[in-house]
Length: 242
Length: 342
Image (cartoon, rainbow over all chains, first blue to last red; front, side, top):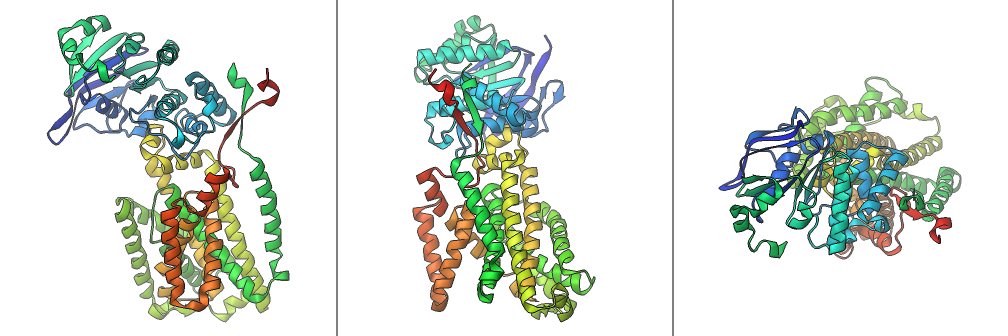
């Protein structure tokens, strides 16, 4: 498999706080990668660095054969990456359907009926179809999280970056979410998923990376990683607030 | 598949009714010279120009988040271009008005490159400083009357139309025309793909950027387009007044403070807001004009009460209450009735 995304010695600090510390890893085309680590470990910051919301102090990001480091978030999105935000960022004055349409028209570049049909399909998949005409500002937190996933999917990405979307779901909802992401992955989309709900994550990903204090502390096959002493130590007590 | 049962529409019953009513009102307004008095025509002409200014300011501040307090720069620039192009270049007024818009866009490009480096309150102050620079610069041009200004020569005024009433009708129709043009342009733009991007920027810049929307470029284009149209409106304002001076042309009170008042009480970030706001502003002004300075106090009071009690303005109140949209920008997902029961 070819390298699709590569982080090369990425570092970013806010004053004395290092959110990324010499972070390097590669993702193969079509791979599903899980990211775990305690709260405040720098997982979301890593997404911000990959998607261009943050620019690094040093290091580089390569995606689909191109150096992305100097590109802004919009350019990186158009290159084929889409993300969900851990703290939902809805277009709160617009309806759920219009939120989806932004992604379909601006990120995926679809037009007219084609864009509308694509949105309806994704909304059906994420279970928000019945909320299509609800103003996004009036959604519950769980619905906002689903809207995050919806928008990311409507962007029709080659690389999907998911940031804690399974928290708070019931068993049945979680199972259907896992199935949705499995389907997306099976259609050829590469996935990087940050998640505290480990059983959901393990059902999808091929590989795990553990991050703490902005550093990669472990990487490898999911079961091996989960049983390793470092992870056991970090995760004792973390599962509770997942 | 479930989505076959659903379909998407951009129209609504209320919007169709509004379109018909709007067309009727427009026809009545076009015919105003035959039913309205001279003073009423002047007042309505002024109202239309304010409506155009308010719609433009709303597009820029309410959607693109560019809170400018310096749009008088373009009102004054447009006015002065009308005078300069007709007096020195000998252009007919109609052409001069259009060219004022083009030149307004040109001058807005370096201005934008400069002030777009500033954010939030600093941007607002920056725009005001730019407007003051414009005012002081035009006050230096002695051929345009310097600080005391000048009047449009009789020959140019007469070239519009020979009789006074014909000129007044023309000036009224131009004002109505530019208001309709601006509102229609704002509506069509917001309905377009780029307009959807701008609305996304209005709601959440972080999410907009991560969905591929180029925020800087979108705002830049909105600023330039707004400047161009504001210059056209400025040219028309001073075609109505027939006299220009730096203080009148670059008045922050007349061309920005009142405009902000209109947009805020009407409802910022909506197309309907500036229309309602303009009507409220003129209703207040005409009923309170005799009270002198108390009129300004009342305006301030109204603005404060609206901002505290209804931050989304009068239209915001109506919209949340009745779920109305007179200009159908949005999308509605509806279920196909035949298949709903199945």
